[in-house]
Length: 176
Image 1 (cartoon, helix red, strand yellow):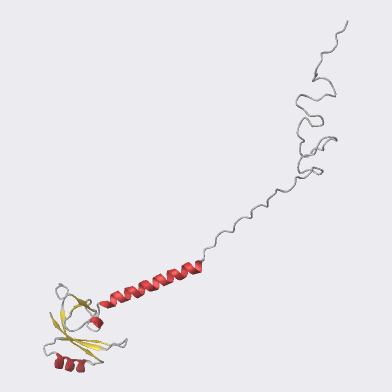
Image 2 (cartoon, rainbow, N blue to C red; image 1 turned 90 degrees about the horizontal axis):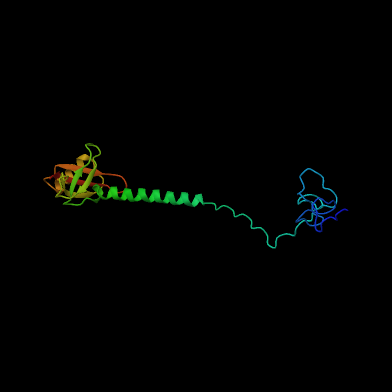
């Protein structure tokens, strides 16, 4: 006598699907470059595969990189440099012979006899070398400067003339 086959699924039976396999589904994903067999669905990107609908939103375009305004930055730097020179020039010229008045003390910054660098200093400081006896406006030669200083301050020892920039004047000085 023969025994009947057991009831249930037989994985070795032909024409039946293996476990967890839906009918009509390929047992393995299709390989690229190999033709699909009829009856099996196509892989994405292959002809005949249904395309999905577009996303409900559009992709965000990439933001443009922010461009620095180099002309503005360069202009600001130039303004700062020019302002620095203007302020430096003002500070440097504040203590020169142009600002001297009668009674001020002066210091000679260099040893040039033709173009001495005179600056106003405090009379109590160790730098004070000369005292201003008179300041006379106008243009002078050495001969007329001596004559003018002799008339204004009889005990003068030195003369200093400044010309140019519209401020022509004569200082009559003596040792401190």
